[in-house]
Image 1 (cartoon, protein in one colour):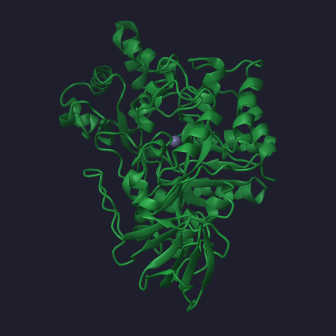
Image 2 (cartoon, helix red, strand yellow):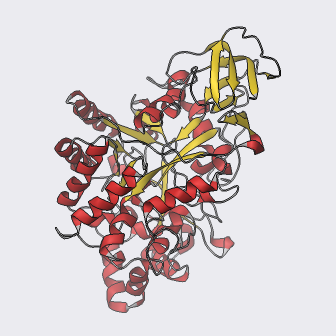
Image 3 (cartoon, helix red, strand yellow):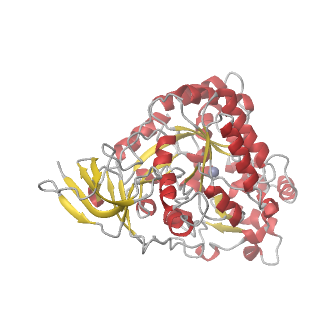
Length: 520
Ligand SMILES: [Zn+2]
């Protein structure tokens, strides 16, 4: 069995304990010993890591690499950050179960990248394909709510009937039994935003039986964020399932400063027995599909419906009028942010890419301009929304139950949000050690031990004897994210190596991490 001795580094073991100088002996696929001055077994490869930090492999709990993990080289932006495990299937977006006629792909391609619409009749089929692909990372998968309910309701955004709800719950049960890590809902997005309380509770009961979390992109992260949080807390309380809030943030300038009050609410729920955690990415801008800027009804039949609505004069007038006034339940980001804070990316014509809507519109009306661009690009655009306040971001990162998730959108072209390339080094280099509750060791814990425990990745996330030998090695002097909003596709510096199940570089083979049923 091959052995590797990492000699003389500063080991941060992922538990949140402060680092100390130690050697790490890896034998085969596992960590055999961690301690001072370990003897090298015969034939071991000895690597001097003096001056380096040695951590458990980083876990990206909020990945949209659902399709990228199947492609050779598709996860390089994560590998280069020191990530060894990703949790895909977030925000209710996903590619399985497949739906016909591009219904899912049309809506979710600006989030996941392009994908075929016939490959995976069931979610377990998709899990099998990840297992067979064996790419550069380990993968755990949440069941995305959108495709799951589409498999039962067809390509329509509408509430499920009482006869349909048990069928959706049954598909969830099958997927969790096959090893899915939980369920993600995107209550801001079509078609998941048509789900009623009854549907969410039916799904919560299945999650509770499996001891796996409801992972929620809240219905509103703006004016109605407290009500939206209450909606998913109600599911957790009513069913007993664990709850995880995705990309914890507060959006729109007029809501700046609300995060500390939201954290007080979360703390009160925890004190009251609700098992709630969160993830966050370290940037005050977000990114999503352009369709999410439009009223929910426009995508009742998917993006084909949105394009029809923008083409016909009557419905186009109605859409533009709604863009210019607040909406009762969802946040109207177009109105709340204004055209200067919305950047558009993913254009077929590169000269348009990465500009703000204000720049693209010039003297024209921004809503008219947006409608024309969406028609011209067949809704295939992503948006970067400069929507949050740096102080709220810092508060979210300071909360002890906030894990780190990139939320990176692995789309092929254009000026993507730099979080795809920079999230983990950015947290460690710019925030760790500078915020209350976020020492360097705690930041590492929020990327390793905490998410492994939360999502049932047993035997990973800590560097202790017997753990899987997923290891990330950093040079703290050189560690920096270099991706920016103007030049986002830049790899970080200072991530000097990783081991995946004890194997370096091109030797690596990622696994599908099937999560067993858990006591909760
Ligand atoms: Zn989301």
